[in-house]
Amino acid sequence: MERDEQEPTMSEPTKTKYDRQLRIWGEVGQAALENASICLLNCGPTGSEALKNLVLGGIGSITVVDGSRVEIGDLGNNFMVDKKSVGESKAKTVCAFLQELNDAVRAHFVEENPDSLILTDPSFFSQFTLVIATQLVEDSMVKLDRICREANVMLVFARSYGLTGLVRISVKEHTIIDSKPDHFLDDLRLNNPWPELKRFVETIDLKTPDPIAHKHIPYVVILVKMADEWAKTHSSHLPSTREEKREFKDLVKSKMVSMDEDNYKEAVEATFKVFAPRGISKEIQEIIDDRYAEVGSNSSAFWVMVAALKEFISNEGDGEAPLEGSMPDMTSSTEHYINLQKIYHTKAEDDCLSIEQRVKDILAKVGRDPSSISKQTIKSFCKNARKLKVCRYRMIEDEFSNPSVTELQKCLASQDYSSAIGFYILLRAVDRFAATYNKFPGQFDGGDIEEDASRLRTIAPSVINEMGCDGYELPEELCNEMCRFGAAELHVVAAFIGGIASQEVIKLITKQFVPMLGTFVFNGIDHNSQSLTL
Image (tube, rainbow, N blue to C red; front, side):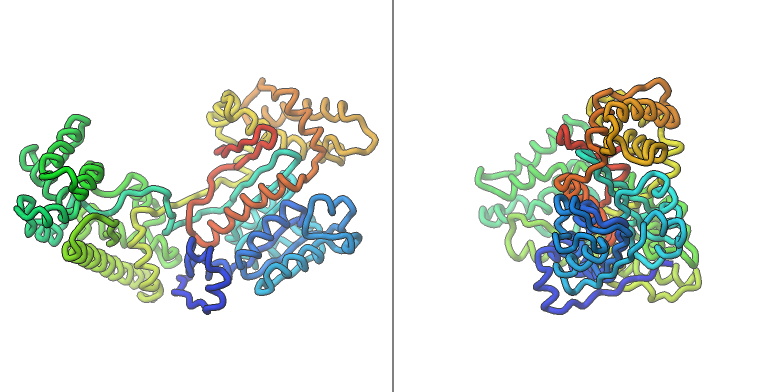
């Protein structure tokens, strides 16, 4: 059962310290970060860069797990170690450097090889909010994924390898209330006004002889009136075809009495808001029809609110989600705009109260405290009810053993995706190479790089065949590049991969924005990246 978070109270010094990021994810998001506990496996440049970003962002606590010692070679790609630390514990050194960046972060380190820890002490990981696993080979990835899923701990894999790298999230389910979409239609209900809005619109005359008053009628009023006028002559239907939409725009333009009426220009530009379909989106319909919307005593707060939303839509919502209650700027008289604001705000409050009561009824029905989900949480849910997201991720083991052959073949045949899927396959192939030859291809030990390339070209097809695409061969040059990489962590690639990983960690912890789906693969040779959903 998920515990509901109460509205945080943040001190002024903390607000000042994190001012810029608070403008992005707010105090609720920052509080989530400060309450989070992160475990990093392997603190090479990729892991150190990922953790650095989170430490600067104010993560609550970090635990660095690495059993290696700082070597001379580390000085060239890891800014979290220095000359004085050569021969010292890498976990201890990196931990100390990171804590210098933000002394509010609680920092711990464990001097142990992550692969060994995964095998010998799986319960170790259950204490964390999220694990960032860097530079793990395939076998350890599969084992750690099982462990974290059983413990309900979020997991992010990150790996840099020469000029390529990947990031992959693995979580059973991630629910998002505040998904912050880049573009989203204002919730004005111009195509489905409620009674109070209709009554207000009826009090305003578009034929007023006063030119000043005519110029200051809000476009919300204009479009609701025009939509009603259109529906009366079109069997109660709103414009749907291209021709009808053009005619509707012309109808709006015909009501202008002078060319300098900005409110009518705004109305013409906003006609698409009238054309939008009524009711909820297909995505929200899928969420309320999800099997988890049938809640029980252990259901999360999110699914309890979804169950309340489903009831609301079927009853007082009349097919619509709760109104958001916000209004965009528009040309209007002060009086009209304030009155409209009150109408929208009152409707949003009434809808929220209805949802709140339904949430309490559902909680009581399943034997839980009716007030266990805070008003603030319900209010946020109502405000964002049209933007809910549910992300589910396949287990790494499933993806490796049973990928989507259709997607795989599509990627292999696509010029845009061929390099990304090639590197994805080769990153698995080099792990098998290392398991067989006790080193990664191209790592200097007096051997011949051409011999390593030949061995890798033999291993790669077996990976492809296991994935269900017999007969496909990777470009020889791609295999040669992997050998030239020599399993090196180049700082510039590690910083980029670490940055992507930390970005996704913030999304997961704050439950804001939508985390990436699939496996993100970076190609530093061609300077592009792709997301593979296998």
